[in-house]
Length: 244
Image (tube, rainbow, N blue to C red; front, side, top):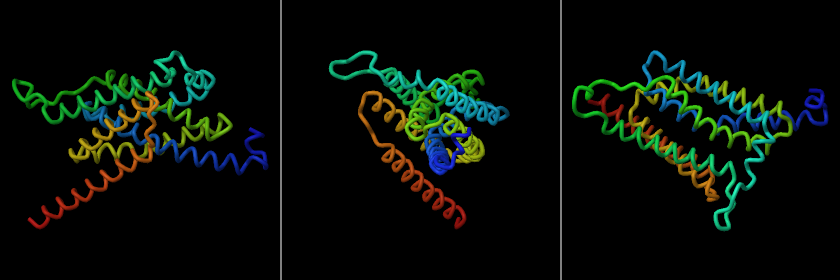
């Protein structure tokens, strides 16, 4: 603690803390989107509980990985080679996580567009189980947390700063996750857009696992542009209803 507050390192540590907190919040956007989609399949009475549980799990997962930082960094070492390309534990996690995300988002899109159209279940909403949703959140938290932790290690020297930044970021995410979830539930087109974002993120994770780097700046620009277009569409629709 004394080293953290030492005058010669204080400014550097404060800048690292705020920069890392902001970065963790940005990296947590995809986590919020994923959790929002998953808890939307639950009964409305337990959605807030599942959302909080998911974000807390994400926080504890990241803290646990930070405390086991030696093991995490060993994941970047090659386990085996495919031709001339080394494959690490991190690569395998990213590929599996990315494919899972693509598959899950595709399934959800199919469910939203098609759903049960015949038989006695056609008009009855199908709710997922609380345990199944939490297991899926944990699976993807590992992927998102791994990327977040490796980024944190590159930006700060002290574990305490990294943990504090993660706690602050998850706190901010908890504040905004509820309103974001409610907004997405009220607007089906935004839910489809969010699912498309998850496919985009899944492709990025899979490509990164295959050593095909895609800048996150391009991904976030595409997401932001699509979001702005949909907000404009929503404003036009609301204006048309008001005129009618």
